[in-house]
Image (spheres, rainbow, N blue to C red):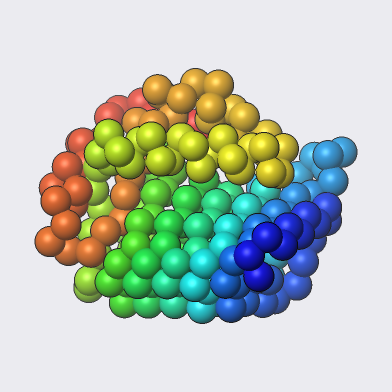
Length: 195
Protein backbone atom coordinates (compact mmCIF):
# COMPACT_ATOMS: atom_id res chain seq x y z
CA UNK A 1 0.00 0.00 0.00
CA UNK A 2 1.33 3.47 -0.79
CA UNK A 3 2.59 5.27 2.29
CA UNK A 4 3.26 2.10 4.30
CA UNK A 5 6.81 1.61 5.59
CA UNK A 6 8.06 -1.67 7.04
CA UNK A 7 11.56 -2.04 8.50
CA UNK A 8 12.78 -5.42 9.74
CA UNK A 9 15.97 -6.01 11.72
CA UNK A 10 16.72 -9.68 11.33
CA UNK A 11 15.82 -12.15 8.62
CA UNK A 12 12.61 -13.11 6.84
CA UNK A 13 11.12 -16.20 5.22
CA UNK A 14 9.94 -16.92 1.68
CA UNK A 15 7.62 -14.57 -0.15
CA UNK A 16 8.80 -11.22 1.27
CA UNK A 17 7.03 -8.35 -0.52
CA UNK A 18 5.16 -10.76 -2.80
CA UNK A 19 2.73 -8.71 -4.88
CA UNK A 20 4.13 -5.42 -3.53
CA UNK A 21 2.15 -2.53 -5.01
CA UNK A 22 3.48 0.48 -3.07
CA UNK A 23 5.16 1.59 0.11
CA UNK A 24 8.66 0.65 1.23
CA UNK A 25 10.13 -2.44 2.87
CA UNK A 26 13.66 -2.69 4.26
CA UNK A 27 15.35 -5.69 5.84
CA UNK A 28 18.78 -5.73 7.47
CA UNK A 29 20.66 -8.00 9.87
CA UNK A 30 21.38 -6.69 13.37
CA UNK A 31 24.21 -4.12 13.39
CA UNK A 32 26.40 -6.43 15.48
CA UNK A 33 26.18 -9.19 12.86
CA UNK A 34 29.58 -10.05 11.40
CA UNK A 35 28.09 -11.87 8.40
CA UNK A 36 27.62 -9.21 5.75
CA UNK A 37 26.95 -11.57 2.86
CA UNK A 38 24.41 -13.78 4.57
CA UNK A 39 21.08 -14.67 3.02
CA UNK A 40 18.52 -12.63 4.97
CA UNK A 41 15.35 -13.39 3.00
CA UNK A 42 14.00 -16.61 1.55
CA UNK A 43 12.84 -17.67 -1.90
CA UNK A 44 10.26 -16.00 -4.16
CA UNK A 45 10.72 -12.57 -2.59
CA UNK A 46 9.31 -9.63 -4.55
CA UNK A 47 7.32 -12.04 -6.73
CA UNK A 48 4.92 -10.24 -9.07
CA UNK A 49 5.24 -6.68 -7.73
CA UNK A 50 3.68 -3.72 -9.51
CA UNK A 51 5.20 -0.91 -7.43
CA UNK A 52 6.88 0.06 -4.18
CA UNK A 53 10.48 -0.22 -2.96
CA UNK A 54 12.45 -3.01 -1.30
CA UNK A 55 15.96 -2.75 0.22
CA UNK A 56 17.76 -5.84 1.51
CA UNK A 57 21.11 -5.55 3.34
CA UNK A 58 22.07 -9.12 2.54
CA UNK A 59 21.27 -11.70 -0.09
CA UNK A 60 17.96 -13.16 -1.25
CA UNK A 61 17.17 -16.80 -2.01
CA UNK A 62 16.02 -18.10 -5.37
CA UNK A 63 13.50 -16.47 -7.73
CA UNK A 64 13.99 -12.89 -6.57
CA UNK A 65 11.92 -10.22 -8.40
CA UNK A 66 10.20 -12.68 -10.72
CA UNK A 67 7.54 -10.98 -12.89
CA UNK A 68 8.55 -7.55 -11.60
CA UNK A 69 6.41 -5.04 -13.44
CA UNK A 70 7.13 -1.85 -11.51
CA UNK A 71 8.94 -2.23 -8.16
CA UNK A 72 12.35 -0.81 -7.31
CA UNK A 73 14.68 -3.07 -5.33
CA UNK A 74 18.25 -3.12 -4.05
CA UNK A 75 19.67 -6.43 -2.79
CA UNK A 76 23.18 -7.65 -2.03
CA UNK A 77 23.01 -10.98 -3.88
CA UNK A 78 20.41 -13.34 -5.34
CA UNK A 79 20.03 -17.09 -5.87
CA UNK A 80 19.08 -18.88 -9.08
CA UNK A 81 16.39 -17.57 -11.47
CA UNK A 82 16.54 -13.93 -10.34
CA UNK A 83 14.52 -11.37 -12.33
CA UNK A 84 12.74 -14.00 -14.43
CA UNK A 85 10.04 -12.61 -16.72
CA UNK A 86 10.70 -9.05 -15.55
CA UNK A 87 8.82 -6.51 -17.66
CA UNK A 88 9.41 -3.21 -15.83
CA UNK A 89 10.84 -1.74 -12.64
CA UNK A 90 14.44 -1.44 -11.48
CA UNK A 91 16.61 -3.94 -9.60
CA UNK A 92 20.11 -3.24 -8.28
CA UNK A 93 22.23 -6.24 -7.27
CA UNK A 94 25.32 -5.45 -5.21
CA UNK A 95 26.55 -9.04 -5.01
CA UNK A 96 26.60 -12.35 -6.87
CA UNK A 97 23.73 -13.82 -8.85
CA UNK A 98 22.70 -17.43 -9.30
CA UNK A 99 22.23 -19.30 -12.56
CA UNK A 100 19.55 -18.63 -15.18
CA UNK A 101 19.47 -14.94 -14.34
CA UNK A 102 16.97 -12.75 -16.23
CA UNK A 103 15.32 -15.63 -18.12
CA UNK A 104 12.43 -14.25 -20.16
CA UNK A 105 13.15 -10.65 -19.11
CA UNK A 106 11.65 -8.22 -21.64
CA UNK A 107 11.87 -4.83 -19.89
CA UNK A 108 12.91 -2.82 -16.89
CA UNK A 109 16.45 -2.14 -15.72
CA UNK A 110 18.85 -4.36 -13.78
CA UNK A 111 22.13 -2.89 -12.57
CA UNK A 112 24.59 -5.48 -11.28
CA UNK A 113 27.86 -5.02 -9.45
CA UNK A 114 30.02 -7.56 -11.27
CA UNK A 115 33.72 -6.98 -10.52
CA UNK A 116 34.70 -10.54 -11.46
CA UNK A 117 32.69 -10.55 -14.69
CA UNK A 118 30.86 -13.67 -13.52
CA UNK A 119 27.37 -12.56 -14.51
CA UNK A 120 27.80 -13.30 -18.20
CA UNK A 121 28.16 -17.03 -17.44
CA UNK A 122 25.05 -17.03 -15.24
CA UNK A 123 22.82 -14.98 -17.52
CA UNK A 124 20.06 -16.57 -19.57
CA UNK A 125 21.00 -14.74 -22.75
CA UNK A 126 18.02 -15.78 -24.87
CA UNK A 127 16.36 -12.36 -24.58
CA UNK A 128 18.91 -10.18 -22.74
CA UNK A 129 22.55 -9.17 -22.80
CA UNK A 130 25.00 -7.15 -20.73
CA UNK A 131 25.76 -3.54 -21.46
CA UNK A 132 27.27 -0.39 -20.07
CA UNK A 133 25.57 2.42 -18.20
CA UNK A 134 24.46 5.74 -19.61
CA UNK A 135 25.03 8.99 -17.72
CA UNK A 136 21.37 8.87 -16.66
CA UNK A 137 21.79 5.26 -15.48
CA UNK A 138 24.80 6.27 -13.38
CA UNK A 139 22.85 9.03 -11.63
CA UNK A 140 19.87 6.76 -10.94
CA UNK A 141 22.12 3.95 -9.71
CA UNK A 142 24.06 6.19 -7.33
CA UNK A 143 20.85 7.54 -5.80
CA UNK A 144 19.46 4.04 -5.34
CA UNK A 145 22.63 2.93 -3.56
CA UNK A 146 22.46 6.03 -1.34
CA UNK A 147 18.81 5.29 -0.54
CA UNK A 148 19.73 1.66 0.22
CA UNK A 149 22.47 2.76 2.61
CA UNK A 150 20.05 5.13 4.35
CA UNK A 151 17.29 2.52 4.66
CA UNK A 152 19.42 -0.42 5.81
CA UNK A 153 22.72 1.02 7.12
CA UNK A 154 24.42 -1.35 4.67
CA UNK A 155 28.18 -1.52 5.15
CA UNK A 156 28.61 -2.80 1.60
CA UNK A 157 26.76 0.21 0.17
CA UNK A 158 28.87 2.52 2.34
CA UNK A 159 32.09 1.03 0.94
CA UNK A 160 30.89 1.26 -2.64
CA UNK A 161 29.84 4.90 -2.17
CA UNK A 162 33.13 5.83 -0.48
CA UNK A 163 34.95 5.07 -3.75
CA UNK A 164 32.12 5.59 -6.16
CA UNK A 165 34.03 6.37 -9.39
CA UNK A 166 35.95 3.09 -9.05
CA UNK A 167 32.88 1.13 -7.94
CA UNK A 168 30.96 2.37 -10.94
CA UNK A 169 33.46 0.74 -13.29
CA UNK A 170 32.35 -2.69 -12.03
CA UNK A 171 28.62 -2.18 -12.70
CA UNK A 172 26.84 -3.37 -15.81
CA UNK A 173 23.27 -3.22 -17.01
CA UNK A 174 21.19 -6.22 -18.01
CA UNK A 175 18.95 -5.17 -20.87
CA UNK A 176 16.77 -6.72 -23.56
CA UNK A 177 18.64 -7.50 -26.76
CA UNK A 178 18.50 -4.62 -29.19
CA UNK A 179 18.85 -2.03 -26.41
CA UNK A 180 21.68 0.39 -27.21
CA UNK A 181 23.40 -0.23 -23.85
CA UNK A 182 24.18 -3.83 -24.81
CA UNK A 183 27.05 -2.77 -27.07
CA UNK A 184 28.32 -0.18 -24.60
CA UNK A 185 29.86 -2.37 -21.89
CA UNK A 186 33.59 -1.64 -21.71
CA UNK A 187 36.05 -4.53 -22.02
CA UNK A 188 37.27 -6.28 -18.89
CA UNK A 189 40.22 -4.73 -17.10
CA UNK A 190 43.03 -6.80 -15.59
CA UNK A 191 42.50 -5.56 -12.01
CA UNK A 192 38.96 -5.09 -10.81
CA UNK A 193 37.82 -3.37 -7.62
CA UNK A 194 36.49 -5.63 -4.88
CA UNK A 195 33.79 -4.44 -2.48
